[in-house]
Image (cartoon, rainbow, N blue to C red; front, side, top):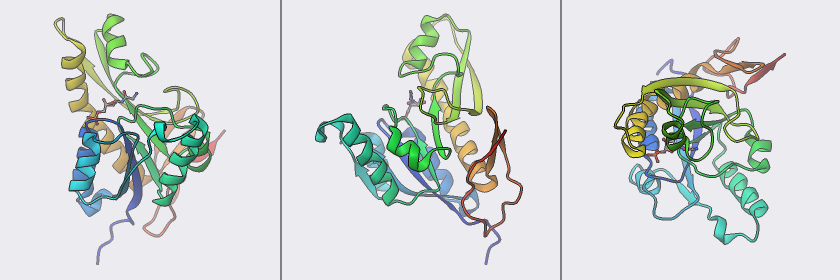
Length: 223
Ligand code: GAR
């Protein structure tokens, strides 16, 4: 018998190489981490994230935009697919599309995204390139709770990375990703184990009473 809290069910959405997904899968091998990755959803075939999930024996689904007549139908399909895994938390780990209203309606307040810049600076799909072009001396990564905007949700955690004079987008992104893997993993684990509260735009770990038998840590809005 163990006193570890019940593991939270996490679905990961990814579009890329999946190095963030791999870090989370590895952390979740320890039951005390408090996370069970119950599904991985991608928007593309043949991406690294799919191979990593399959190798780990995690159920996968691919929801391709091109298979749907409209973006709205794709948005619906993504939400429906994620829902089949019955997640407590949803993690966007390099998912390069905006989540639509159907996903926000079902999972809003418990969707995490990781972004390779220090938000609110350099939001969008080119956070690393834009930080370099903007002459930033320090950048980093940010974990946010997803809202309807582009990288505008409340900040949960951040870490910094120095920009070097000879950095290219690829060298800088590689260093950010090293830091980001740890940040995402630590943040997801804490949210799963401790819950969180959102007061205005401030996110804090911990809920009033989170015991092994409490339901998933739904965020508590405080005004
Ligand atoms: C990460 O750096 C993540 O922040 C970024 O994609 C990378 C995924 O790497 N996401 C975004 O830019 C979203 N706007 P991975 O596929 O190796 O995990």
